[in-house]
Length: 38
Image 1 (tube, one colour):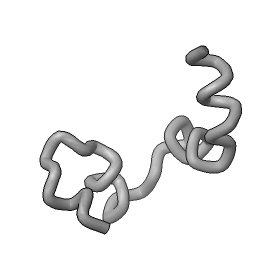
Image 2 (tube, helix red, strand yellow; image 1 turned 135 degrees about the vertical axis):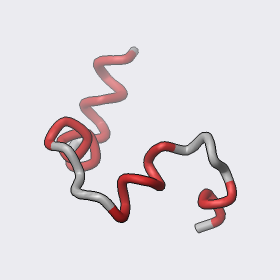
Image 3 (cartoon, one colour; image 1 turned 60 degrees about the horizontal axis):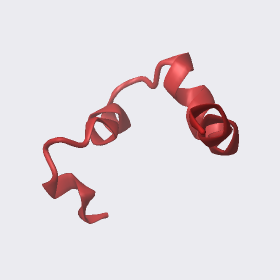
Image 4 (cartoon, one colour; image 1 turned 180 degrees about the vertical axis):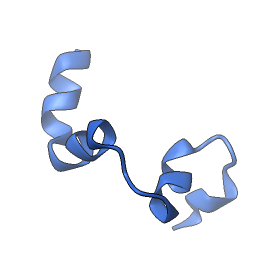
């Protein structure tokens, strides 16, 4: 993925580190995240 070239992308840093349950839940259910934002 070319997103690694973007330093402003925090999700890239979490790839090498343990993913917090909060973020992990968002990755598992991205559809719910968009629904809550909208």
